[in-house]
Amino acid sequence: MNIHHLELFYYVARHGGISEAVRNIPYGIQQPAVSGQIGQLEEYLGTTLFQRRPFSLTPPGEKLYAHIHPFFSKLDAVAAELQGGVTHQVRIGSSDIVLRDHLPELLQAARKKVPGLKITMRDGYQPDLENLLLRQEIDLAVTLIEKKSPPGIRSIPLLELPLVLLVQKDSPVSCAEELWARDKIADPLICLPVSETLCKYFQQGLRRLRVDWFPGIEVTSLEVIDAYVRSGFGIGLTVAIPGTKPPVGLRVLPLAGFDPVVMGALWRGKPGPAVQVLLTEMQARAKRFTAAGAGA
Image (cartoon, rainbow, N blue to C red; front, side, top):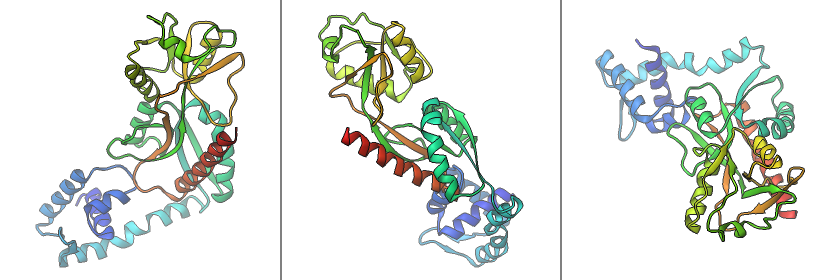
């Protein structure tokens, strides 16, 4: 028998159906794939293991579940024992700024609740991080999120971040509306790649204003945007983070009427204990940022 098919049947039997199993399997897999592989298991065994509607195990299904339950139900405990009972490893992906400025404090708080927590980190932005999650190369991503997550990925919103433009401190441009009033915006737009959520939202806002302004310089990080604006290469597109000041030598132009982007956490399947602690800490930190922004 295919061991993976048995694992899927274990989750189906434990959670009372295929759709519930998909929500609790600790890795991403879609409902059609589970249905198909369970069907292969039933075909191999030559019997029906459960009734679909309403859900109930058949006698052969009960017998198989009783046999495999002790093995699959104890895997997490065995893993903890083999790790000495103290090691919890989480692979996190996010942008350089989040990894550098925001995760250290969060991880310190998480380690107090999860002794032995080990972290590995990967930098990247939304499309790359989603692919890493789908390939099971990371366990948790902190990035901008769309309204609807890709299939197999779960998400929670953390912060709404307003879009803003960055100009040099001595720039003659005093507000974004001055740019929209021009027949043509000659200043190069410095931004992340056009596939990023930040750029998509900005272009949507420009279309509502019937303004054409496309990227002149595409870079790989918000920090690089700051550096290029400071060096006089153009106007940068970024986000305003609550409680933080504009970069040195730069000035922020608010973008009234533009939809904010949402920073959130992404993961697959049912989060393990360590990931759940990190999610809770992220939500608490996001609330503090929101309160700091409101009080500014």
